[in-house]
Amino acid sequence: MTIKTKLITLKDKILEMIFPSKIKCILCGKDIPDFTKFFCDSCLEDDIFNNGNRCQKCDTKIKEGNIICDHCKEHKRHFDSCHCPLNYKNMVRQALLKFKSDNARYLAEPFAKLIHQRLIEDNVDYDIIVPVPSHEKTIKKRGYNPAKLLADELGKISSKPVADILCKNVLTKNQKILNYQERQENLQNSIILTDKKQIKNKNVLIVDDIITTSATIEVCASLFVGARNVYACAVARNQL
Ligand SMILES: [Zn+2]
Ligand SMILES: [Zn+2]
Image (cartoon, rainbow, N blue to C red; front, side, top):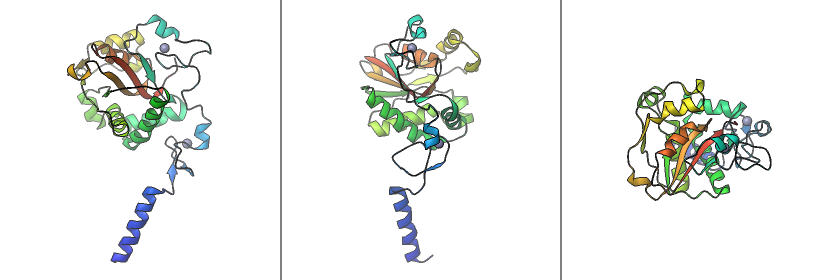
């Protein structure tokens, strides 16, 4: 390759980075013409956003006129509020499964951008970002902790510090087959806070990939005694 050809290739690569010709929908991978968007038109029609009237605590969709969902009325919450831009179903569900188990780490950046936008819209003021932990064995098997990837990307976007101070030291049973009570009992003794000083008088933001019953963030939030406020966020919310 001559120097001239190399320079042309380099120029094309730089132009492609600045003005990408093929932007792909982050859910289905289809090309989209507008690089300011994350989704193609057909995914946009698929009820992908966690919008409308939502529980002020756990962010699940609720009937118009209600403030808190029945679940939050029954259970004490250690977190102040929860913020999830997407609705965990269909294409969102598939993309998140890919992100969690199929090495689709590239999704961390657009997902973190979506969370960041939602946190701005909801006026969430946080000082420190803490990812929900994964057990060492799970990280080894998967190669990464998806919540930590999201937390790191969010840290870059928001310029807020990321503190990996929660540790999962017991491998818990498959959470999917358990109800809320069982999930919490299963988790309660499996997660520990390794550095209390970092959260003292701080507004803490817990980051997870998906919030289903909110049992995991509830257990994490219960450990942040001494924090000023505890918020939680995730890419998507499963509707209760
Ligand atoms: Zn799409
Ligand atoms: Zn709720």
